[in-house]
Length: 336
Image 1 (cartoon, one colour):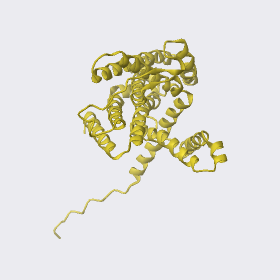
Image 2 (cartoon, helix red, strand yellow):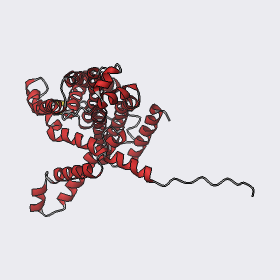
Image 3 (spheres, helix red, strand yellow):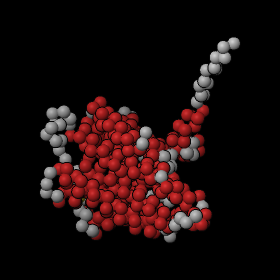
Image 4 (cartoon, helix red, strand yellow):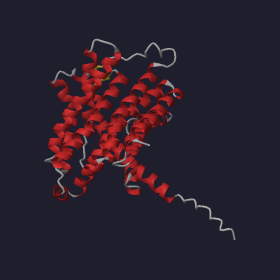
């Protein structure tokens, strides 16, 4: 099955699944779709080129701000505002990704990670220095349920539909890039830059292109969060959230799009499960663990995953499938 057709089928199945979820679960689904778009770009960047970005939350914020300002400025029907906002998210995050990609062509290892980390730390100050609304951020337009669907679905389900569709739009090109010639060039640069140069591949151009390809889905992920929450604030894209995106990529399996989905589900659902557990504990103990238990579990889980299955959940599933006994074909009847 070709990639676009598979993406269309999976999108339809995900939309159908929203009918079995309550409003809060649909909100969680929309949040998972936003994280999936960003983590899919990050896992391709790290897994195929080896460039570690600790600041993908800033790319999401760039897309979210671009979406919020543009969609709010459009005076017209909601599809026009939505499309204009998405186009702005792609442009703003893509340009920021291009600047980072140009730096990535010259920086390696911890220097690139340090640069992207500095962007996350500087985001609150930039939001106050630039016309971005300061700590209060920017308001994004509210997309109400269309009249034709208002009697059928709630607003949270409608936003989940939009989130699933935008996420599919963001991730499908990554799947095609990963399995195409661009993916081969990225792997060649990762394996040996000198050999790649001798083969006619420009490592700097490949790294810059990989950053842009990773930034655009992250920006669309920020647009999804703006649709779901109707607001973009610098506090929502801090260091902790940016590191969670890295954890999701590592736990899912670097380079695996399916693993990115698994990791995104974990980073959205696990904190909620932890909050529920902490709420059931005695008041004193629950207050001490509030905000700390989730970090502890993520850290312990990441260490355990790295030691037991370095390739993440995706590699583990591949090993389980490979270890499954194959059925033997029935022996042919010779007539004897």
